[in-house]
Length: 356
Image (cartoon, rainbow, N blue to C red; front, side, top):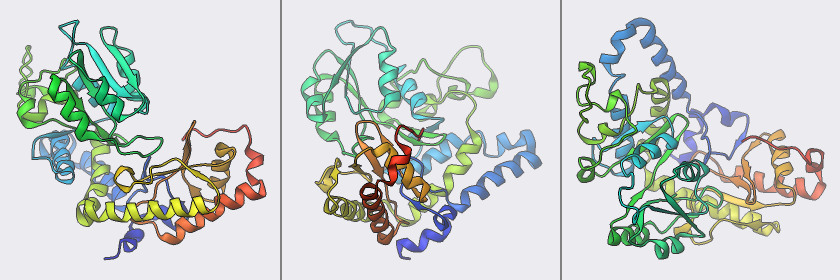
């Protein structure tokens, strides 16, 4: 199948130019069926559903994510969001030595990560400008290095290998988490899992949760990094998108993403706009950030024209094509941005702001 043949599986594409896939991808029609399946299961099976698959879903759906990212079975678990997964990992590393209590991350890290570490009174947080500075800042005082593989404002891919290599040299630990709406995921290297004991935990992390024992005994593998009762309907909804990724293949999606983001960069620069995303394909994620005059208002006008994207302060408009987008849609979006700026159509929205 051609990638654009998958368009028919995404209802919103019939009415919009959907370029906000970096934030919330277009919903596959199958996701609605999965949520209905959840409702029908609850309706007909009731409490029995827990023993018929619901309880294991953080692991079984995690295994599907694991296949996508190349992780072995039983090493990836699902959480409600990245903040919870980050907090679970952080709870494994409470500093016991005041000489090793530093956390180092880049200033482009996502706010949930930054806020979590800022709120820890026993940690010293070092914020540096970029990935090269992370490597330089890691030393024997460093406990944790939470990194963002792809920076959310610029879509710049970080040099993860150099960071990990330096952290391991000094005995620090590196964390990278990712997720979607109600579906954050956490991978823990199997040989490391048994050595970690999270203090942010819950009954699903127990070795025998339904024994309701008074004392904690950690489950084996990644299950010990679970917390309380899982978010079952979100897990149902997520699998439809994961199925498509497995069907198409990550490499094919990535190759198309690089081609289309380059097309967007060429179109936007030809129109005279400043592009903030990396030109080097090896350092560019799936999003193109473009600066326009009054980009908040331009974004609002684009939405009125059914071109869905977003913006971030101090960065600009973010355009994130996915495998189902056509090149014609990208040309259309770039032309509309140019027309909106040239005509001043955005001026009616000056002073307005959007939440997403």
